[in-house]
Length: 84
Image 1 (cartoon, rainbow, N blue to C red):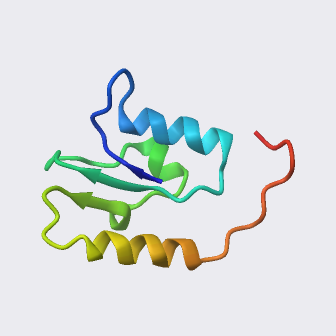
Image 2 (cartoon, helix red, strand yellow):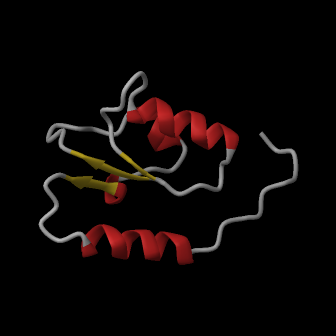
């Protein structure tokens, strides 16, 4: 999931936290124009690190594309049916 931080009604950090709660296997990438963005503790706890953060304007979208491809190719444990 590629998430911006500035979203209407809810910020990207909260979006990620909620989505992770519903589907822990989702991989997240943050694409933001907030130059001073630091990953909050809650997101670090669920495994998001600085390598998942891409600052706008991104001069070459292949950087983000390659990160998504790499993230999708890594195996994650299957989710249990009904897991929330």
